[in-house]
Amino acid sequence: MFTGLIEHLGTVSAIELDSGGCTLTISDASPILGDCHIGDSIAVNGACLTVTKLNALEQGGWFQVWLANETLERTDLGERIVGDQLNLERAMAPHVRFGGHFVQGHVDDTATLISITPDGDSLRLLFHLNEATPTRPSLLPYLIPKGYVTIDGTSLTLTEVDDEKRTFGIMLIQHTQEKITLSKKKIGAKVNIEVDMVGKYVEKSVSAALSGSGSGEAHAHWKELIERVVEEVLAKKGIPA
Image (cartoon, rainbow, N blue to C red; front, top):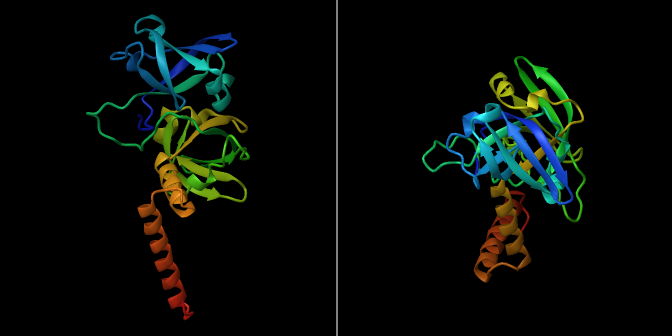
């Protein structure tokens, strides 16, 4: 589990490809390697990856992670090149203050950066979501203004959502611009998106209850709640139920 608060920017120093995926070496990472061990999880641009090798002293501290083909297809990591910077966050420790939101490090899909607009010292960024497919349902139901979204591993607040245009926007204050890679991306760049997992659970629970596939008690509860809301709306309009 992660918070979406980026700890450090690492640098891609090597990429080794093979038919099953690739090995990524990330250098300049010593600030997050002091308590890191092989087998630990680190979110790399928002994707939860397992450390397979590390050396906290060479090349400013480096570690390696394995990217399976599923990860390469689901995220933007397959497009990274040597020299690129990456957002890094260690798995959340139980004793730390929780300042972001619940982030699993399971990237749902990518989105495309379509505009960057200065607003004082801040930047407004607008993104376009991919079209939904049978294997990748639309993420729009989980995006609401003032809700949360994770972009390249960074916990951000949504400032706007347009369901018809399939777009959503966020704002980066000056402090955040300096701490993450997002402010350095160009128009047309892909970013990794993870939506709020709480919204996923709520949708599944409600859908199950309404379809009758959930427990009988849950279905009855939701049915009663919906009937009460409908009756209240009709009463306000003077329509007999």
